Length: 387
Ligand SMILES: Cc1cc2nc3c(=O)[nH]c(=O)nc-3n(C[C@H](O)[C@H](O)[C@H](O)COP(=O)(O)OP(=O)(O)OC[C@H]3O[C@@H](n4cnc5c(N)ncnc54)[C@H](O)[C@@H]3O)c2cc1C
Image (cartoon, rainbow, N blue to C red; front, side, top):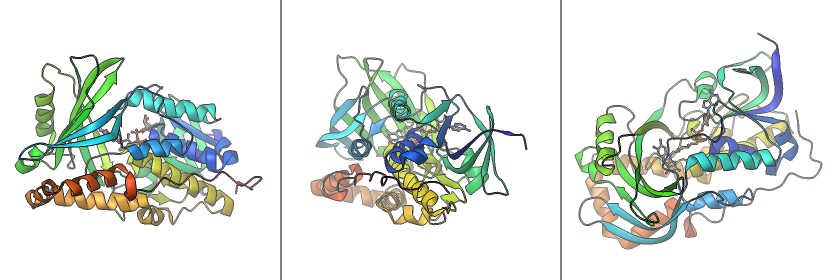
């Protein structure tokens, strides 16, 4: 092995919301360990990410938990339209979603972590990863070899670190396709739409239209999602084409979904965000990325305090946490709503306004269903950190 160019206690690979979410939470929980942490991303920021950018309200609460406000351009959505056969369901739902652009949002998170002292290096690609006999992880990067006692794999749906160090299986992978369509008008509308009518024709997913600002101009972000990565490409493209007349540019990207029981850690390695798996029902992943980040930061703090970086209990702790419980219910929802009796479940969902409102509040993490996100405790003064 070549001589390492850097050694760090913690290396986070990936500067999306899962990576920066981990760094920001660690800065609150254990500032000393956060100063011994390095974040790497292959992209230069600001960078684009294929994503509709819809934030459920819980996301804003998670941001407040690390003292951040939504300081990038956004559209606040106050009304939802859901189409699932029969008349469209219209719901008044003030602040049910906040639509951002990932280029701006991810940059905001990265800069916030940097302002708080994070050593973040962009334009650095991790090409290979292996575990050494002394337990440390060796990352072969475009900078050279970097050694870490603990690595956080925040490198997205195709995570190289997950495949090399934790779980070679591809797992449950969804696909989403999107386009940005200019909107004729001064401001984007405050309504978003979910369209499940394709389920009746065998689509295991839905189409969406989200209002957004792009470079100061109002747009619709339109797209289509399927829990099946393969075999649905044409159908998804067709659904997006129907919603984006005159626009030819379409972007597709996988989303890795949560499957209870799949490994989320290995000695010295923690998976977060898409690398770990997100919402199977709608493909929402940003709030989950931040929630995983909080949990990973706690694992790191506790692991270094105890001198045990095996992270053996992380997967079980995620599964039993509110994050894991919600993901498991969403996986069940995906099986019911996109399964052979989907017509029955959509009829039930259409039937009751109260059920619709409760479902929406639960999904969005507001009201009774997700009590306020507990504040991240600060590190005890003078607490020893480091193995
Ligand atoms: C079309 C589409 C629409 C979506 N819409 C929504 C939505 O409206 N709301 C929502 O909540 N979620 C949405 N999602 C899901 C959401 O985009 C993801 O769940 C979220 O981006 C996961 O964040 P992450 O930090 O885990 O990964 P990412 O955001 O993918 O970040 C991973 C980072 O790792 C870096 N990286 C990868 N490999 C390496 C390497 N080898 N070396 C160095 N760096 C590396 C990448 O450059 C990237 O910056 C959508 C997804 C798609 C595809």
